[in-house]
Image (cartoon, rainbow, N blue to C red):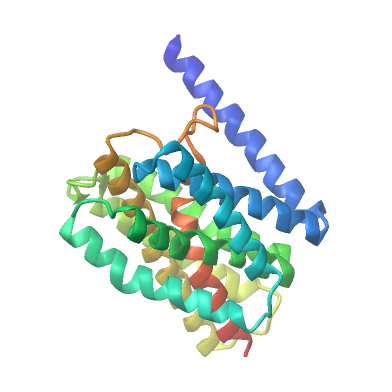
Amino acid sequence: MSSLSGTSLRVATGAGLLAAVLLALYAAPPPLWTALVLLFLAAAAWEWARLLAFGPLLRHLYAGATALVGVLLATGPAPALPHAYVAAAAFWAVLAPLWLARLGALPGPGLGWLAGWVVLLPAGLALVYLRGESPHLLLAFIALTAIADSAAYFAGRAFGRRKLAPRISPGKTREGALGAAAAVAAYGLLLALFGPWACDLGCIVQVVAGCLILFVLSVEGDLLESWIKRRAGVKDSGAILPGHGGVLDRVDSHLAVLPVAALLWMWLRS
């Protein structure tokens, strides 16, 4: 009974969250959307500070400072945006893999504060930028991670034998990752063929390759948060979402995907 109740709670929370996101994505005026993104950044920053064992006062200070810096960046000059996305791409391409390879201790407050900003702020800016370009575009990138997660789960259940990262997340398998990669490649092909642009063969290759790059980043984002939680000795990053845990538990993959997606979009449309 408790398992059924837990599953029902998880489904209800997920459905409500999906409805709220879609409503905000398509109906909220830009100032309200930006305010919601800043609220998300503050909540995610508080959970990040909790995972890194910041004290109660420092957690609230970090959440407020993150929202304030988010306001300054979101309302600042547009040319500053690519620099934030490049910083995030460098983190996920170089520093995060090294962190995961070493499986070292969590950073202290100083480095942890900076790392949190590199992880959170570019993703928040990408939410504002991509939605400003088109709500459909942002939804397409969000859907990519959802497709990857679902395909990895079902492929792993059906074919999973070899662990992907047993010391970080024992439930993930290489077969699940390969199944997810195939699903994301098919999704990218559909986007290229039926998207709102004229896509020749070269464009199709670029879109599919870009989707596969984003898939790899989504796995990395998931693994990094899993490792941080494991080192912190907690199951979830928070408890704000009944049945789902915290904000970071739901957006770990998106934090890695969205800034690079914004960069790829800038490149594709140039």
